[in-house]
Length: 390
Ligand SMILES: *Cc1c(COP(=O)(O)O)cnc(C)c1O
Ligand code: SF4
Image (tube, rainbow, N blue to C red):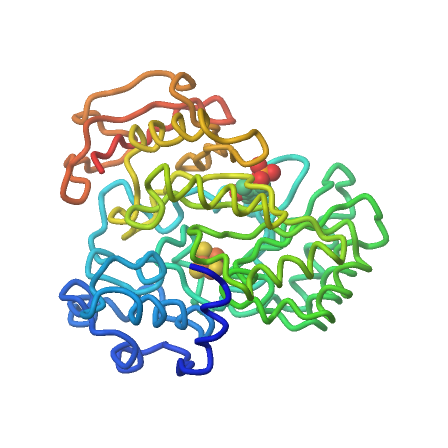
């Protein structure tokens, strides 16, 4: 879609924040699978519904341009509108698919790799993504990080000069106010000039107007600062989101992208090739393409590992090194980040193998699993990832 079209239409589109079924039904006619989500007990205790004005506008645009009934697959809608499939939880899916709990020395702090730490600075996001691997934390009850939690983490950092990167994650770190963000960064930096901040945020994609000149200046005086964002589909590269990226780059803040491989959204070579080449043209380095994590209720959004490897192989044959991200997975149970290739794994096991979980019934969504791929985790222990047929 050409950005000009979107800008010219903006005035005719009614903007809304969507957080209830009623609001959602004002925006779209729910498909049977979407409607069924709301009719099931338990749905309301799941990751909340939240689609902000800017992102819901993209759904609306698709409706107007797409099929009359609005039922043609919309990659934005798939990422944000819950379906009943979320309530289908597989035996090997969990609320903590990365095993972050093993590496949490302080509340909100994850220290899994020696030279970098990650802080969950808030559980708020501008939009809740249905594929979120931290979906049991996001939109929950934790709220924003408190002054005393910041103090504890700052103390933890004092004794650890080997930590040279601080990842501000969440939730979405840019839902914090400018004031809170600035004071937190100052407490954590503690005068150390060589410590790099990495802001992990979907805000440039879903709420680009939050990237104000004031925010950019605030970050620019606290360099080194990098932004890691998450564009998953070329349609997310709107006039507004490109402008937000341009503001960051003009402020001297480099931007990288961490896309998630998502079924029905970007699980084909054409879409990903367009996404990555456009990102490069905008000035964003495609950094990771993540294989889906085993987060509870996300199997319908995952792409089978073997199919993912096939897509990535084709992409590598087409794209420049600059445009090509690293295909990786966060291994279950604290196994760490693992670069995925057709060769780098220990072995495959048949579906009957327990795969490290108590109750394997070989039932992954509709397709079942064809086995388990066994990887060596960063601690030398074996980790099993299912070979799903999707
Ligand atoms: C992914 C991740 C990082 C960052 O890893 P990179 O490979 O540097 O992007 C740091 N800490 C935790 C806990 C992570 O999950
Ligand atoms: S913005 Fe990030 S943390 Fe928030 S729901 Fe989306 S993926 Fe999860």
